[in-house]
Length: 517
Image (cartoon, rainbow, N blue to C red; front, side):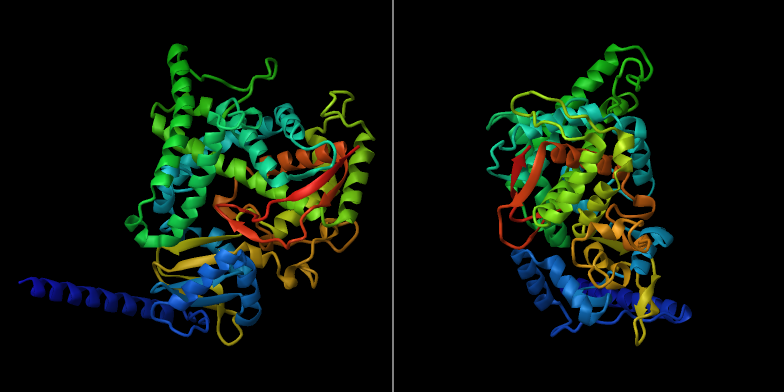
């Protein structure tokens, strides 16, 4: 009896597979679509050789550059088989625009949602459709100009950052300091007060929270790679990290909900120009939502982006400035021209640096050029994936020259590389792989208008809401460090090597020496 049941199931699977194949073939022919050019693979049934090569590249910290080099021979758009599933990979800006904008409704997050939910729950980075729209509407006010232009809060955490930079030029890992700094500034913005990591001693609750947060989000990348097999792997350390982070945030949420219950009906807190009260996301969420788990999920989704994106950007900026003294000198001239030469004060507490305003930061063209160039070469989220929800197409990648539209069948995973696109010589010229902020200064060169060829914060409906907040905070930190230090020197001769968590960072950190003024 059992063998008959198995036989019927196999027949049913075969029939469904044939029906799907026929449906895909008819759609492709009806729309005149080509197939994406296949990657040259030694075995195409399971793609295990490709999988092993990708795993080795990841271990060596060269996944991004290896993909970039392969496009020089294979072209920007290819199809391949990985672990028995077909996928498409592209770095063509026309295709990426289609995925993120013009054909937005044809793609969703795919298996990424299930991979991330044990840590992030249901929120803006794990949901599609109406649930995603609801989350986006809830958090949008956090990134209004009235909030991110309130720079004194950032200055408070900059002072704590400066206190941890040696005043004698000794070597320091700025990357670690930047991630510590942004953890405090992001939690201050979202929760109403910082976790206080920069001021906490080893073994403190703040340190435990930070370590658990970092380890949990790093393992999310592993869960995503495991795909449908993730349920077969139990990681007790990941479970404990989730518990630590959830418990800590739940404490903030419970306090906010208790305060709401003690107040009269109505909004708990709004920004008040006269009283200088600050808006924070937790207070706003608690004013309209009673479910503590839902509030925690929304907060964690935003915290992940608000903290890590800015830290990644700042790390890349100073990694490159330490290796390009001419860029530091030009940056210094712009900052000192605006603010004048002021004494270093973070150790003795003497002397005052004029603090940059939001308007001044927006007018500092070379600061913005440096940020743009760092974002171009080291985008915080250098690659991503989407899953086709129906039969659809992408505008390029088929035909003899790769210029014809290609067919994307329902369920196909599409990988796109911002890293490779940002190194396109067609968009950025023959020196596309060099760090040269001047390319962004329109007064000195032909205007650079990369359009969809520059997507450090994604694009389309899911474009990063915190883009301007991240740029403002990063610009502020850059200006303050230039005010306080007369030079930055690399203390690490090793070439840059990627470390891929949910955001990009340097595997070796950013080991530099800073010379006080």
